[in-house]
Image (cartoon, rainbow, N blue to C red; front, side, top):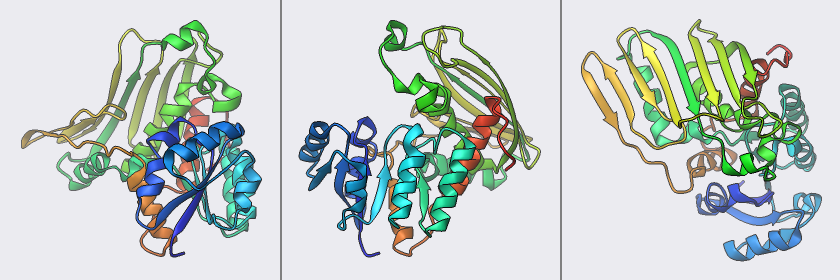
Length: 327
């Protein structure tokens, strides 16, 4: 491919700043068309962002001959359906995270893409962000010694809308897979596997402490990497305080970082304490999308694929007690 001409199934909030402008700004990339079931909203998005075409039907967008790659920016329960549609049309796919509502669905997505010889990428964009590449560099430098333990904390006070009962698909398990843990925890587990290797054991304790919605709001997880490294984490979305902290400890030091806030990456080692302030780009998916476009053009490799993302769904299923099939 010379130029990647994207069609997006879905053009909601994630498209406004995170991904839509990135699809337009990346070298050799164009956003040609968008689709939303509400045609007026699709037309409004297209008009505001200078996009040529809009649709209210996904198949029509997929079949457009001017579109040669598909971005799926819809809730997770639709990812399998739209991946099958795009793969059957022979068009490369970039799908939002989490990849699907279960590891089994991820395997179906991988299978249909392999059957039709179609590349499949997933929007775990932290794998391409400079601040997390700095964390990877620190871990691989050896200055922390042998890595022994991972500790994760993600605590949030309850959202006013959830307390008042406003509709929110992110806390409806049939749509989102679970609650905020699927939305935010998936980013954390995917990044940890990018930094430290695959997780092959995981379990969890779940609770619904606030009763604001159907899904769980408290998760305590224990997990193990293939290397034997131990990990633990707490996710609490009905907390009294807000905390975003991951700490990776070694025999000679530790590194601490936030996943969602843009606080410094902090390193403590035998040589002292260091802080790295590395801001995220405005359009946060742009570095990963550039890698996808480059790979589709025969240059380099993208680090976030259906294969890597499915492993994150396996971990999530294990923590949630869903007994996923073997990796």
